[in-house]
Length: 254
Image 1 (cartoon, rainbow, N blue to C red):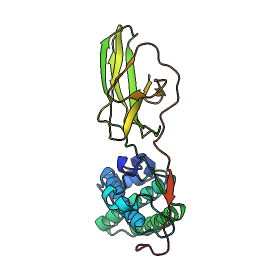
Image 2 (tube, one colour; image 1 turned 45 degrees about the vertical axis):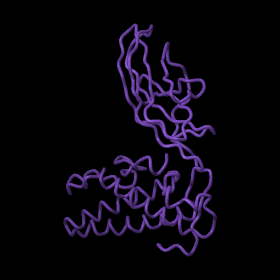
Image 3 (cartoon, one colour; image 1 turned 30 degrees about the vertical axis):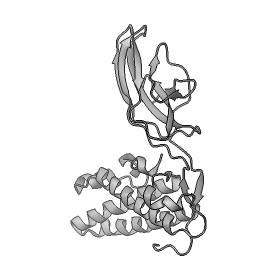
Image 4 (tube, one colour; image 1 turned 135 degrees about the vertical axis):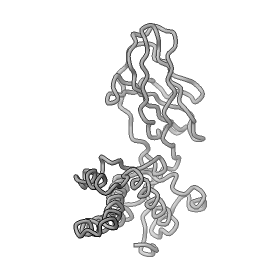
């Protein structure tokens, strides 16, 4: 996924690092979704600063970096970890300010240091960029049309594909129940400028989605499931970086 697609982590992902985080948020009336979004915004600003001030490699889009911001930045494992730890630092900052509790102060210090280290590791490894970034798809529009299907409930995701074959992150899952004698029609929503095609993933449950089209479908068309589901690959997580930009010793922050 791209950094502009949404938060790199959700509430459950934070529990990998801090098993009690849901309980702490509940006790202290802290909205974790808000803090996840705040952490994404702060990291995005920091990443842009790194890209504008890098010294050890060349940003291929440096001339337009201020215009495009971080719209081409890929969420790598390093950024995902940085985001989780930075979110936890923000949460414990709020918890400490609420109670001035020494236990929260220790957690705040711990996660601030871990977030700082994760940031440094991200810079050393490199900020991953997609040269032709394809945004995450919106949830598709589903409808039932006259046909010959057996009926049932179908879960669907779509993803956009560029002319070079780059596939963006899939949409959220949406579902529709149809009656026997009907077929499921899928219409993707809001194609981005770079998209030329789309893929459709369908499953009988939200956890069993599989690619249903043999080749990408041109933008402007729809997809109709006219028979049984076919066995295809599972949805991906979006583009991998094409290049990495590493920060040098002259970075303003650290």
